[in-house]
Image (cartoon, rainbow, N blue to C red; front, top):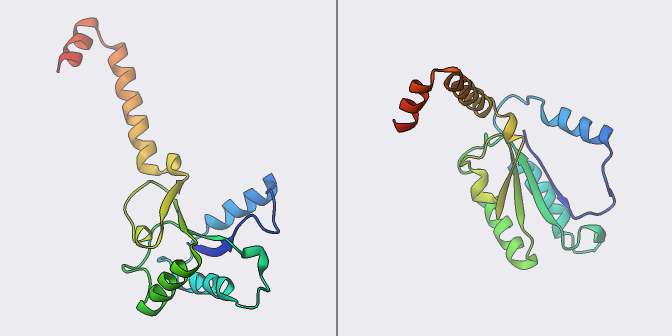
Length: 154
């Protein structure tokens, strides 16, 4: 699930609660597996490459790629990767990734200057580990004193 685009605080401004809810609902949708990051990235590069200055609002903009991390490896075909490298070098923009879920290595790391995580505290494995640790702690607190002391020295 990816969305790529140029942004830089342009026309939009702030986002209200309803818009944020709609965005999160959209990002939660399934799209059949595997993220095609190349297509939205090519579209963003088209906007950033415009020599006529028609999109002045994007001048100095960085790119943000949003994904669950399920990307092909390598994530881009060679011509798109070269185009990104060339334009990055010429214009000096950064590519940021927003990984939805638990922090982990993904092919998104190959594209981005920095990858940020979102909603990782809701990752099912992290939630399960947290709850399991809390239950262990509760059982330990309810145990007799001799057992708590033995557990702490182990």
